[in-house]
Length: 163
Ligand code: SF4
Image (cartoon, rainbow, N blue to C red; front, side, top):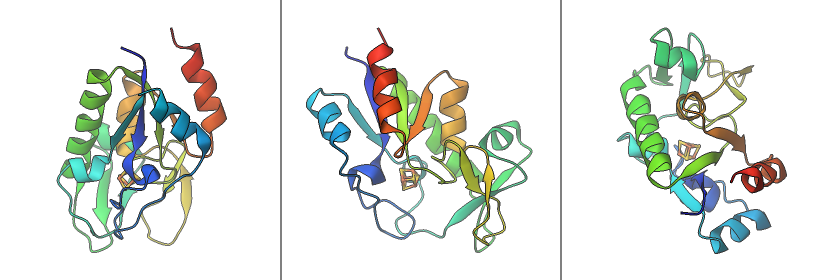
């Protein structure tokens, strides 16, 4: 099958964010990939069993890689530990990516699940730190390249380089 592109569902306009909203991107590359039959939508947090809306969550003690190593946790603003749901959602995203031949992903920047470069630091004070979300970390550890919605041209170049 043609290589797929795993995409954060909120970027496609699905109202799956913690606040019940979405982050629809109208960039033409999404339409182009859709026409090529490549788009595979996923919301790791909803796939992990979390509701819409839900309390905002941040990662404490490190980034998504540290969550997988057991040294960091994902905590909601109310103090609930939602690490297990984040891990389950990330596993779902990887299974889906493999099933649909996705060797790359475009995920929403700065999310505790989907962020590929930066996430919030766990203080709920709006502070960003370098690091990846739980799903982005899991996908990249499995060799799936993760871009964000501001890196679409680079993502398309990478997609064209896949044989
Ligand atoms: Fe979007 Fe990812 Fe958050 Fe789901 S987990 S709402 S796909 S950023």
